[in-house]
Amino acid sequence: MSGNINWFKYSSPQTFFPLAGRLASWFGTLAAIACAAGLYLGFFVAPTDAQQGEAYRIIFIHVPAAWMSMFLYLVMAFWAGLGLAFNTRLSGMMASAIAPTGALFTFLALWTGSLWGKPTWGTWWVWDARLTSELILLFLYFGFMALQAAIDDPRRADKAGAVLALVGVVNIPIIYFSVKWWNTLHQGASVSLTKAPTMAATMLTGMAVMAFGFWFYSIAAALMRARCIMLERERASDWAADYARGSA
Amino acid sequence: MLAAFRCVIHRDLLLAARRSSDVLTVLLFFVIVVSLFPLGVGPDPALLRTIAPGVIWVAALLASMLALQRMFASDHADGTLEQMLLGATPLGMTVAAKVFAHWVISGLPLVLISPVLALQFDFPQEFLGVLALSLALGTPVLSLIGAIGAALTLGLRGGGALLSLLVLPLYVPVLIIGAGAAEAAVSGLGGKAQLLLLGALLAFAGAFAPWAAAAALRISSE
Image 1 (cartoon, each protein chain N blue to C red):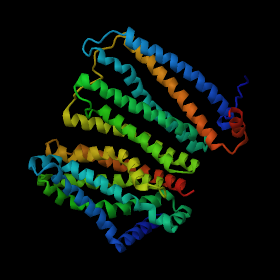
Image 2: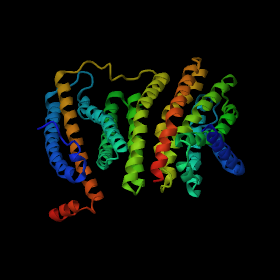
Image 3: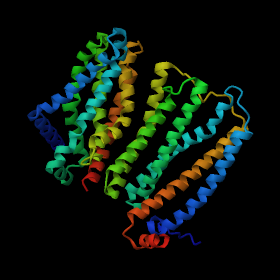
Image 4: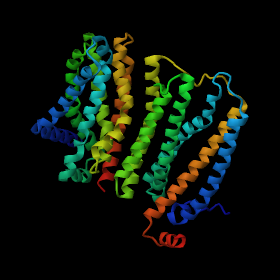
């Protein structure tokens, strides 16, 4: 390759559509393998925790889901900002394709967290800084999706969503620190995850493998969703019509 | 540029003065919401004293959100907004002026009446000033953040409910720090740290929010 790569080749839906299909199936396979391996490590290999018993095993889903929920918001805002700055069609499509997966992981993190909290803390919910900011993150995802759903013109929806996603990204650290501070002011440190005893190596491996599994799943799901969005928006074009005829 | 700034403020205030019932509706909403809480949680003075700052702040949040829809709607309907978009004045400047006028109409009355409502909750008199000051610093931030949401949802169906979904999560830091100021003052810690943080939020939002709202307005009126 002569150092003269055309970076913009895949910024057009027509060329990106087949690539996204190939990538989605690759990452989907990788996700299945990594999740199976991670769950096996988590449920059969990792030792039982001395303090929390078997209940702790939900962290193999909970922690990677929480990581992905925050990471995906950043990725979404990145694509949204790119779309706003360079006026590229595909970036906006990627941002709207990522949002539902991000919301899914946020919800999963909250749900598994409360399932873990009941046997461990004795309550489904505490107004802990992490829980509260995760809940607000879920509201931010919902706001992004609701705004895009309310606008009929897809280009306006992309741009309006982009402004909201960028405002949200600026706000997330402010929200996190204000909630953290509010929490310590009100009730003192109740339960601290950061001061937990150091984890066994197998637990950490299982969690890392699951994180990769979720990551690959997010890529695959976002690309599949982006393919649907591309087809829907480009339905007037020749390549989309050809594809629809070919697969029908 | 400053002349245009003053002109927009003057115009918006004049319009509000001609239709003063709009201003009063928001104020009455604020008063009624605050008065509902003792009816809901019971008249125990100790409990009311503890929840007073939080209740007043949440009600201020809701009242400020209720008024948001009107910030650009009438200008959008009669075409004034398009002239502002085309005008020589930087749009961020015009938006800043409109946000300021909107705060004077919908935020300032809440600040002024809050000590009276706090007295209803048997809130200690020596800390009324901290509460009012926290509202005086915080409500402009609400108007600034809300302007972005109002601009994004301009002319959309289901605007009101959508606007609350967009804006309320972004209000969280202001609520926490604002309500925290009066609580910290009552508990003897002094609310200075919170008031300084609110001032920082105001400076930050004042510098950036008008431009974000201007970008949103351009998107909405393409």
